[in-house]
Amino acid sequence: MRKSMILLLLLALMVGLAACDNDDDVVIGGIITGALHRVEYGGNVVYLFGTYHSSRTEWFPLSEVVEDALRNSDVLLLEIEELGLGSSGHMAIQQAFRSMQYLPTGLTWSEYLPEDAYNHLVEVLDTWDVRYENVRSVHPLLLVIDLENWLEFSLADLNDTFFDIVDVYIAGRARELDLPIIGLESLEQEIDMFYNPPFEVMLARIMKFKPLEESTEAFSNWPTLNDYATYYENNDFDSLMSIIAHEAGSRNECLYITYYRDIVFNLRSENFANEIIRLLQETKEPTTFFVAVGLSHIIRSGAGEEFTDIVQQLRLAGFTVTPIWQ
Image 1 (cartoon, rainbow, N blue to C red):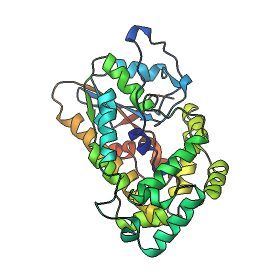
Image 2 (image 1 turned 90 degrees about the vertical axis):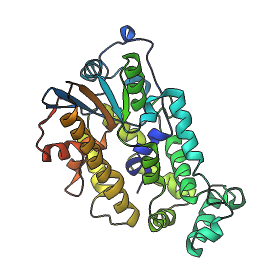
Image 3 (image 1 turned 135 degrees about the horizontal axis):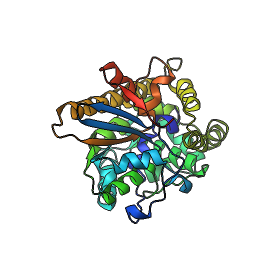
């Protein structure tokens, strides 16, 4: 399955920070609503906002309803705390990636991969002008993902530096407002889930890796990152749900797709919802939380019964979740 839908959240680990000078300088009235929802329990409130892990310059500031919710909040929750820590968080993310970039000491692909996967990957990489001798100790799954990320972003009119994504714009605004920033999961958990799937899942992804010409044609002809960004800025969530249903729905039972659907998509949404419920129920002093997570964690259940998201999980738990972006 394409990186843009399965690994949308992963991009948050590769890109980062956009901050305003100060609160008084912010001009309200942008276009991004992020499917903002509100949840109340006792004296506590949660604003649930969907991010896109890249950006276009004209997206900032966000829409007035979002900026107001953020200014009225007491705590910011992000997927991982490091996204809110500026340069130090970026360094921590880079260090975490470096720590698992290579195969265990002494191993190369010829010892690590089955013969058919080894031969397939070497042959395909030759079309990308990548010599096996230069990468033979690099974790093959990381290399595949990195090349696909590079290709798809090279075809996109988007900002993809550490200082541009929506998540970290939110973090910059939170720092200006002197809000505490909390992670919903650890950096280690997120990296492990994305980059260290079961061995057979990794092999399935590698065997789906295509020659450069085929990959370029596919990324050019299928819905692109530019398409997703346009849907996001126009609140066209139905189109996004149609793509998710097509690419990751039950009709597609490829091993690595089912892994990402069940674990990276659904399980993470359930975990996020459980942490939000805990904060709503256990926080004694009335507190308003602003929760910023990848958009699909808020709207994905609309793609079909095989999907769940935070909003659905909160409603199943008995909470009233009200959309306030419409």
